[in-house]
Amino acid sequence: MRTLAEENYLKAIYNLSQNETGATASKLSEKLNVKLPTINSMVNKLADKELVEYQKYKGFILTEKGKKQALEVIRKHRLTELFLVKIMGFGWEEVHDIAEEVEHIKSPLFFEKMDLILSNPKYDPHGAPIPDKNGKLPKTNLKLLSNIEIGKTVRFVAVSDSSSDFLSYLSRVGISLYSSIEIIDREVFDGLLKIKVNKITTTLSGQVAEKILVE
Amino acid sequence: MRTLAEENYLKAIYNLSQNETGATASKLSEKLNVKLPTINSMVNKLADKELVEYQKYKGFILTEKGKKQALEVIRKHRLTELFLVKIMGFGWEEVHDIAEEVEHIKSPLFFEKMDLILSNPKYDPHGAPIPDKNGKLPKTNLKLLSNIEIGKTVRFVAVSDSSSDFLSYLSRVGISLYSSIEIIDREVFDGLLKIKVNKITTTLSGQVAEKILVE
DNA sequence: ATAATATGTTAGACTTATCTAACAAATATA
DNA sequence: TATATTTGTTAGATAAGTCTAACATATTAT
Ligand SMILES: [Mn+2]
Ligand SMILES: [Mn+2]
Ligand SMILES: [Mn+2]
Ligand SMILES: [Mn+2]
Image (cartoon, rainbow over all chains, first blue to last red; front, side):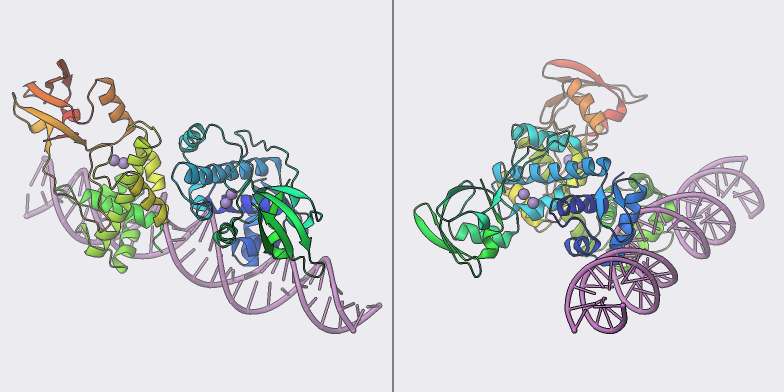
């Protein structure tokens, strides 16, 4: 039986290993809000269970088995988020924290029913792909809004930060998923970005532009 | 922060103390599927936190504080069960086990939304009353089907066993919540009961009749 | 290349929730 | 009432998940 803590470690390691930097002890420590030695002892246990590969002082990578389990949890998380928005009427900025809890429900029936009610959805409310029952994910090829050339128009399809603060901010400035965004200008010094969305011109900071994924 | 185990103990003690027999160590042990010494150590902790009153070799009773907390969990359980049936389309025999997990979700928003969607419901799918936000329960005055006199007609309003096996059996023999049941005959020896439901005559065992609550 | 800093590991302790074995009290039975 | 049985308690062990303090390795800067 997989424990709640184990599930959180697997998910965090999976998410970190999507970045170039990979999953290191200190990154995990920060992400999971536990001290470094805790990471060490937990990762050792996960290695014993053959869920991660781990050599001292090198980072961690998930085994196939570990990856499959991580994707099961991620599937539950994203299905839940979409269910909360579509069926229960929550805002996209409210659902992440609730899904962090609900993703640990064991009952497969519960999530199968969500999947049925939502007709096998492919994306969560933040534009992230929902792994299918076998852990398959569509290959996406997204770019950061911060890297798009001036003059281009792109479609906002996902965020890389699902925190309430960030999403509320986007809603407040009138940027929602699937909006068309035209790049008007970018400040070289700090990446400050002038964009046009729905005929309205807005300015975004470089940090914000890095969290917006477009195609 | 209340732990999952604590919540299960509070709920179990509350439920047991609704019977005349009260909550004893061995009953709790059986209900929670843990050995007797575990009950002992946990109840000692709950007593330290002033959630139960406990004197050696006597039973346990919840303090006001403990009762309030138990009712919070019971509210979440029953709201969840109704949500699963009414909104997600589960059968009444499928929901208890799922609710045993979901009741431990901390997010108050999640349950407030259920309550809103269901319009402040008063009863769960098994006829059990849902405590309100302050832990208030309607006074119900139900009788056991096994105690009703021959010749009377009663309304089936609740079950005292929400297990899948029992509820599936009731569905199979065509007895559903709010059916009218006429008592045709009762065998003195073992309580075997002949009833009429929807113009159909059926026979129920004494054990089954004891789990059916009527008014 | 050496020293300073950042990152990772080991050792040992603590809390929660569980167990088994041994013992004690209460209750039922003869 | 004396004994047997059932029920409850204490003692001590264990596993999971966390911590702090001390130490080791790796990386960065001088
Ligand atoms: Mn999320
Ligand atoms: Mn998401
Ligand atoms: Mn139930
Ligand atoms: Mn119920």
